Image (tube, rainbow, N blue to C red; front, top):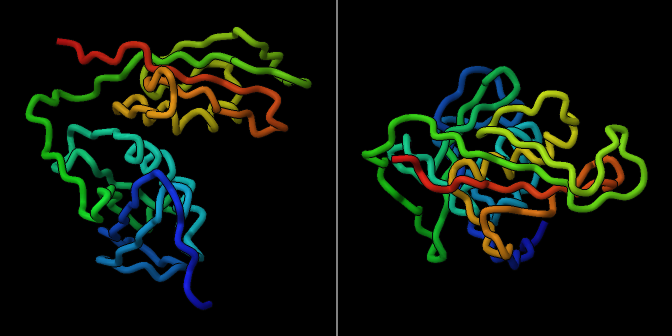
Length: 203
């Protein structure tokens, strides 16, 4: 096809590098291959959807400022192919000039520091099989599943939980430590707000 359309987006570009190959990949990716995404919503044509599914929480988090203090570059993370771990990728974020963002490893990082999270129903319509209604709230710590919580809803909320747990800020929200557009995939009957409520790193 002739020239691709230029994507207009407020979000940064991302770079994926294949760092390991441990099986046969139908897409033929090889060690050293580099893949560029215009932003976290615009993968290249014919991009592997299995990888996209596994990758999305990481590139979503990076796009909103998340840092991974245990990494040599805090603005990067490794992601493994969900089909038998055949491939490993390094995801990185680019600045406005197209250069890799690099923040060295945090020397004070002492292991996981899961944040307190709250999921709240902010809109509800139609029928919800779980009976969720406006005002319902659940608390969790870091990325822990909530016992008895709707799996489809948790799947939808997970990218926000992941991003907030690693310090992301949603600049378009009045409270950037939250996002209130997490929508039920079953007809959009329930919309949730996901919030980080203890953003301060403990002593």
